[in-house]
Image (cartoon, rainbow, N blue to C red; front, side, top):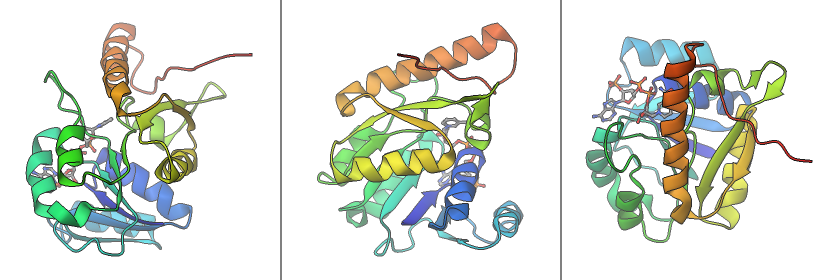
Length: 203
Ligand SMILES: NC(=O)c1ccc[n+]([C@@H]2O[C@H](COP(=O)([O-])OP(=O)(O)OC[C@H]3O[C@@H](n4cnc5c(N)ncnc54)[C@H](OP(=O)(O)O)[C@@H]3O)[C@@H](O)[C@H]2O)c1
């Protein structure tokens, strides 16, 4: 798949690196493609990743992943505008400290028919870089539109090395964000670092 990852920091860089390693064509959308940290990320990934400015055309893109600060979402969505139509959209962003952590409403408004997902928002990036803890595969709970887009997102989550756990449509986004809040609390209280995740078990 051709994936535009908006943001090349902890989340964007970690996800983009793994998708490129899986043979996906990864293009980072950043404010300054020549910035040293962007260039050093590209050099460390090697083959399969490039960088362009955020408003650069996404005509040939299948998936757009938002991995920028939550406060930057409104401006970024308006920069891309109608180009977002028909793309699979993944919101990883958190408006930490706000009543609503996600930007799903703005994305839905900008691209009403596009398959939209809330994923990669509940755990620290360390769990995406290394998705195995004490021999157990980390679960990634996510939600979004059912259908073809979901098959693609499921595969993208699995490509990171995580076990995808789909909990339903976007009406479940509040539960995903509650899980994020729980993760922050548990990380602070346990004092064992951020390589920490929740595991669903069943028989
Ligand atoms: N860190 C985590 O463990 C984690 C986990 C789950 C979800 N998230 C969410 O994922 C998102 C990214 O977090 P992160 O930790 O990857 O952040 P980060 O390391 O600070 O990277 C942020 C990226 O967004 C870019 N950016 C900053 N301001 C921007 C703007 N106004 N317009 C466009 N791009 C902008 C930055 O580029 P510049 O270099 O140009 O500033 C950088 O590439 C956040 O919404 C965060 O809440 C983070």
